[in-house]
Image (cartoon, rainbow, N blue to C red; front, side, top):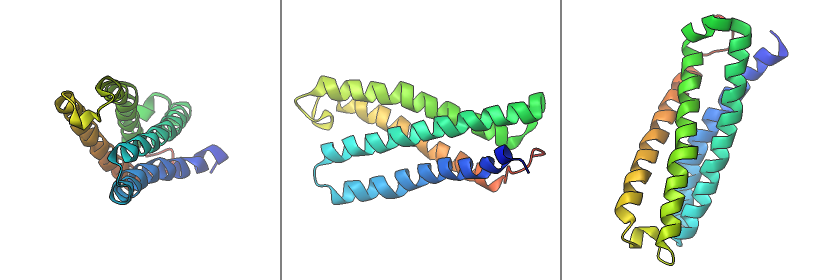
Length: 153
C-alpha cells in the first residue's frame, strides 16, 4: 500500500472523529460548564470553524486521491460519494449558514441574539445548521464503516 493510500483511513478518522468529538462531546460540555452562554456560543463557533477547516483539508485530499487513483471510476465508489457529500455539507454550513448567523449576532448587538427581535431567524438558521451537522455525523459514521482503505471500494 502506498504512503498516500495509508493516509486515507487516518484522514477519515481525523475528520469524522473531529466532527463527533466537537459536536457531541466538547460543545455540550462547554455549554454545561460555561454559565455565559454568549461566550460558550462564541467558543463553540470557533471549534466548529476549526473542524470545518479540518474537514475541507481532509475532504480535498481524499477527493483528489480517489480521482487520481481511480479516475472516473471514483464516482462509483460509495466512500468517494460520501466524502463529496460531507464536503458539500461542510462548505454550505461554513460559508453559507455560519456567516448568516454571525451577521444576525452582529445586528443584534448590544443584545444577545436570542434576546433580540432576530432570535427567530437565528433559531431557524441554527436549527438548519444543527440538522446538517447531524447529517454530516451520520454520513461520517457511514464513511468509517465503509472501510475505504483500498482503491477497490
